[in-house]
Amino acid sequence: MTQTALTYSPDQAEAHDRIAAALRSVGVDLDTGLLTPPRDGKTAVMAVTGKAGSGKTLLLAALYRALEEAGVEIVSGDYESRKRRDKRTLAILAPTNKAASVLRMRGVPATTIHRILYTPVYHPEYEKIAEWLAGQGERPEIEGLTDLALDRAFAFYQSNKSIPGALAAAGLRGSDFITGWKRREEPLDIGFVDEASMLDGQQFEDLQEIFPTLLLFGDPAQLPPVKSTGGMVFETLPAPARLELSRIHRQDADNPILDLAHALADPALDFHQFERMIEDAAQRDERVRWAERVEVDLMARSPVLVWRNATRIRLINAFRAVHGAPETELLAGEPLICDGIELPLKHRKKRLDLEARGLIKGAQVVYLGPGRRPGFSRLHVIGAEDPQISAASIVKIEKPDEEEPFIPFAANMGATFLHGAAVTIHKAQGSQWQDVQVFAPDIYAAAQMGRSEAGQPLWKRLAYVAITRAEERLHWIVRNRLSKPSAPLTVDDLRGGPAPLQLEQEEET
Image (tube, rainbow, N blue to C red; front, side, top):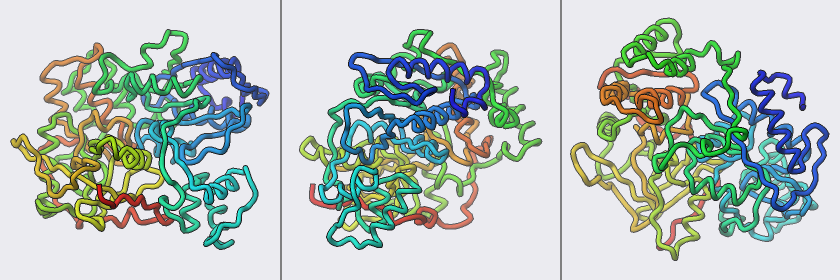
């Protein structure tokens, strides 16, 4: 067992040993560091399940480090060196940009499922730089790039391990070195999937086609996917392949947010008793706040979490009203949620470009301003590795008591967006924010209905998912009121760091 296992709890250590045994059976020995070529027909699918605070992410990170130390190549989705038959690879995936970014902030090089399903095609000249940075070739001489620019690319890659980021540091745009995207044709090797409770059956099948060895990490207490006909995909695995973590770890033991989340498992607990627990926690700890109103300043970057669509639409319109947003246009800094991409088959390349850059259904986006052509928008995709793009946009602002949304502006076709100042708890799965506002009257409405999901009251599942989205502070909103903004909307917080890659999509469709 690797040294990282010394900090494990007993259930984590048992899970680690069983996963290590499964990896050994497919030719990856974590104890000796011995790697043998993949064997055709040898497959393994396992799942690590547990509630918030049970140590799933700690185990995932430790296994990633052990595999990297053993010499397994990490596939990031932004560039892949030429394959050798004896090479063993690992990809760490999440269903959304935000979920992947949570792992990256913890030092785990995660990417989205889309970025693995679709691989970039590099311009041959700039691929020489990628090969050099990845240790597969000599330092190249590229016309138009100085030694200083190559030095900047090298320095960036040493600290960030991102090929596109390194090329951007050299002064290149994405459209310079990525000529397109293609559906992955060859399988990979080992795949870790975080937030596996969000996977639907089709995604699970796609992943099994790509990864002979697949390890899912998921929380069984979350809500199943909206389009799911049953439960979560890991519930279909045989019992020996499901590894459950139950212990709450020392670093999480004094977290009042997790205490509230785990209290929901008590079958005798009703909604009013739960609210009293929240009120008591708020008096003891500033990480829980009993709030009489929605704080509008927080809505620009972390949406209010609601259950009912009517509540979502009402809060969005209140947010726009207090900021003085005109009906005919968006203000820079307004949050959006990608609702899909409407492009005909002949524009399949553009769809792949957008999806591969992180503009997938459910992606959280901030509007930066209009593009150079009518109907185009400059956008910042939250959690994407290369976040700033320009794309044809269709923005829909839903109105209370109106069936048809208002469309302030639109291209003929392109990416479609809903406003993101408030989102349903279902859409919030896989995301985390420092501050999370939960609209309690909606949870109460669910409790009054008496509905159940998978044998548990619906209100408890909603409350569990909503409050575990909070990284630092939970705001439990008990009144249908909205504060006034302390300052105008801004995008200044999105302008730090290296020059962003620009996806040039502003062309006739």
